[in-house]
Length: 60
Figure 1 (cartoon, rainbow, N blue to C red):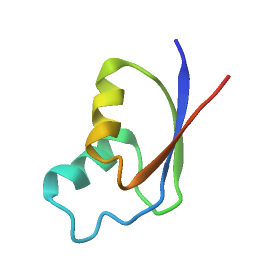
Figure 2: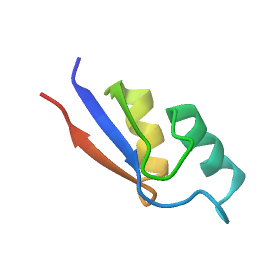
Figure 3: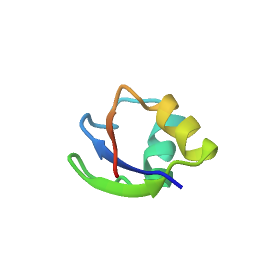
Figure 4: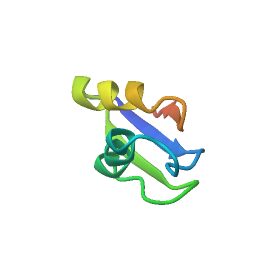
């Protein structure tokens, strides 16, 4: 599976509760925090919902 690196670049403050929970479910708890996860359809869907708060990089 392809791995992706997700970095939180904007705060979850003043966002809907659903977006806050999506960030936590992705493993992002602080600004500029990064996680490496496999690019499953579920993860891609979660990233799409918070695309304005995160930066995504594909890993080799």
